[in-house]
Image (cartoon, rainbow, N blue to C red; front, top):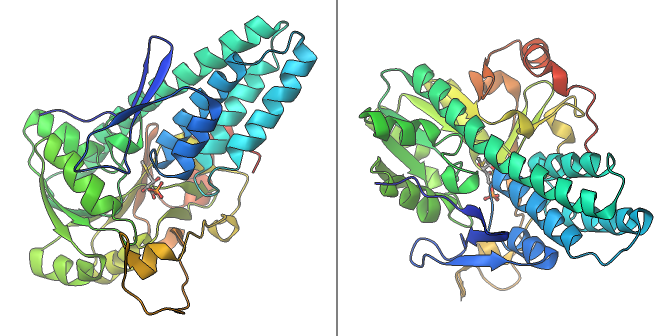
Length: 353
Ligand code: MRU
């Protein structure tokens, strides 16, 4: 049993697991230039907030390494254009902007083009490595806070393949499997593009975690009928007051958790916090192609002319969140105060969007 990994940096080459083809085809593809990295993010070959950030960081480093600029000024101009290009790939997950900003700041500290190319790559590698360490810590905290609970629900895929390794919401299940702690995970299929059924079920099966698939509309009944004891999800962006954007359907689960009096946890690394945003209403919500709803695969389900609203994310207000599990510990209400205390050193970091 192994925890799957979706991003590899080997021998100066970026390789990703093509998540669009899972679970039936296991295909690893090389991303050899910035356009390939951009395309992989836009077309969801790589998805999940931390994985998007890591891929964008490598994409920028690869783009920069292929620059033919022979002076620092031209190089910086080109780098800026590449940064804007990658930042336009997806709007909601802040990890994308956070990772790109980290590289841009490093590039400002150098004196030569060669030095810039080297520092950009080493920063991308550092982001990649740190994310694995952070996810492992999140898993340890989550394992502790879930305690004796066995039946836990999740949505989307906040797993190993959405990060460097282990995942956020799925990390306790992977770590639990390693130490013999048994969970039974109820995975919501996650309409419209099935990150739950295609990715979470597959990923948990790889590490031997017991998982039952349900459709999103079955969540309330399943909590009641199967004795779900807690809900845990990831996040794409968390505002300074704790309001958390995550895959569409998460807000519904949080409301259900409150109604059924079970805890609702968000698991996310500190790179997912956006302290420039006071509250969740400011978080940009990606809207996607209507075909994701009107069709299943290539088959049209809804009649021609159907009006469609297809937001990819929703925002859970902080009052529904029992705790936010980070690599720095678990943050509980009062979020405004405790996020500030836990992530104080991040305050004032400018994130462009
Ligand atoms: O559209 P996606 O698949 O990129 O959305 C992903 C999610 O909403 C995840 O739950 C979130 O990014 C956390 S991944 C650790």
